[in-house]
Image 1 (spheres, rainbow, N blue to C red):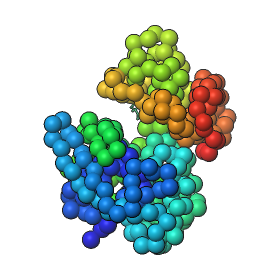
Image 2 (cartoon, helix red, strand yellow):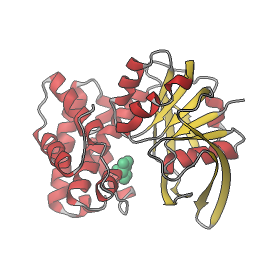
Image 3 (cartoon, helix red, strand yellow):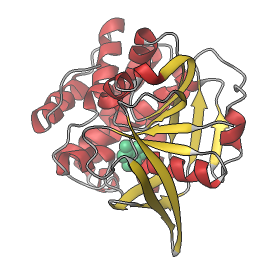
Image 4 (cartoon, rainbow, N blue to C red):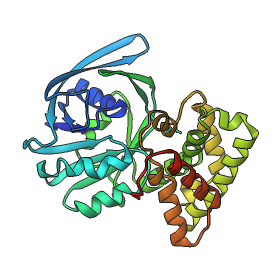
Length: 304
Ligand code: KPL
């Protein structure tokens, strides 16, 4: 029987913990020093979909405990992933499964380089969930989740559990393209909304912002093509406009971070993109200006 430990029980971590446990797979929430909402012992989380509410009870363990962890789902912010895994590394035996579900790129390579003995996987989700309170999560929009491991075509056995969840979860034989596509879309939307403090839909409605998004897309595509990611960035502008239309009322995750005074994921989005641009000699002045502007607003450290 698989037993999953969840690091980062925010909206997405809490959603997957609830989905896994409801489907019969036990989950333990991992407490980090900076989690004010949890205490070691047990915790109840209520998942709301429209008028339907379902409460699940989880065991909560401190990261610093000593019990072994065989399957770890990490849903922290991108800039926290390496530190969060370091906090439980003593509990992870060689071959332990680690699934990382966060925006951005760069941390996947950092984790693989630091803990090559772990079986680490990356994912991308479009599930729409937000915290409604300390112990409640609203599952506002059903999306889909893709999980994979660079170079691995067939899904590992443990993934059968995820296939059985009441959510759309699929194995991706080409996770790099999936992550790059999400990175490209986030780079074109998130920093602009964070800087202009607007909802996603305004990027289509305000001509000046729509023009900026178009220029960003052109630079992102040029870098993606130079980095061998043609498939990820094909028709990027259309893909971005479709996401803007589908999420018009949303505040992007980066805008939410800025409004809450938290660090943003800019270094794992635009920072990662610009590093690939430098590697391939592709300039991206619009993206570089946005990186500097968002770094000036937030409290970000260069990590990617
Ligand atoms: O992924 C997102 C985010 O906010 O991080 C988008 C797709 C832009 C939706 O808001």
